[in-house]
Length: 125
Picture 1 (cartoon, rainbow, N blue to C red):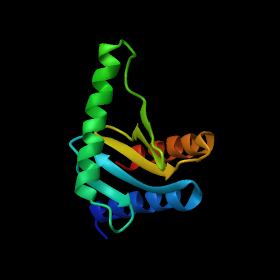
Picture 2 (picture 1 turned 45 degrees about the vertical axis):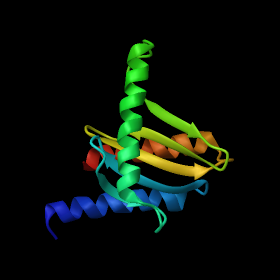
Picture 3 (picture 1 turned 120 degrees about the vertical axis):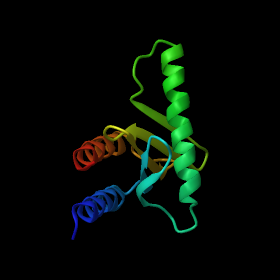
């Protein structure tokens, strides 16, 4: 197995561990800053290209809002929907972790697991 294949497998395993290890998380994706999917655990009907593009736009908008309002560097973006929630955090230089979760997710547990996973992914990238 080449180094690139090994990295891709480690990324995929890490994403799968997040989804399988946290009951409220329903899917996740590691996305490059320019919106390309690096790895994902998403439902089959999910359009990965659209997910990547939206994550990139969210990162850009969140960063701009943070700058304009003097909030400092962007740490996370949380979207709470009527049916489900999405969380986006940095996962190393040039990548972000997008996590989908149940509407009534225990946010403390999700944040803890996502922070750990993002740190682990940052070491792999």
